[in-house]
Image (tube, rainbow, N blue to C red; front, top):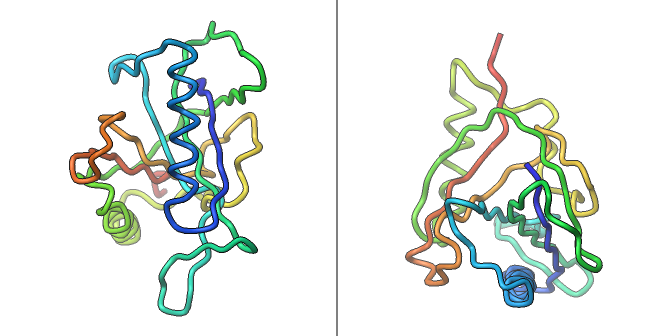
Length: 173
């Protein structure tokens, strides 16, 4: 798929998400584009991930920020405007879990990891390296990234957001 990419850095949890979604909203307004879930898919993910403390809780600081990236699918014929970052995402096989509310994203990832870890037919893609430092790539190779598909964007009430979580997998031999 072809996507337009938006990325921001943040110094506390939630900071880069807000900044990145503001960039998305500015682009939508300037471009006079309305997100239609049947025509556009919206994906988001930490990139790179936040730091994790000894208790297993995520954190970020000015010295150790983390990033958040959003992709919106666009047609092949889309013309780049200004300094927009366009990426190609290769196809592949993913395990997916659906959740309601962004507050459940961590729980959704845990369910997905547990399912893949104990599955007889599928395993984690061997090229999956997590979500660290892929914000500058133009071609996203299958297997290196997990995604959060924001199904009902631009819904902004966190308890009403619907998200599909994608983890790259391969069939076991």
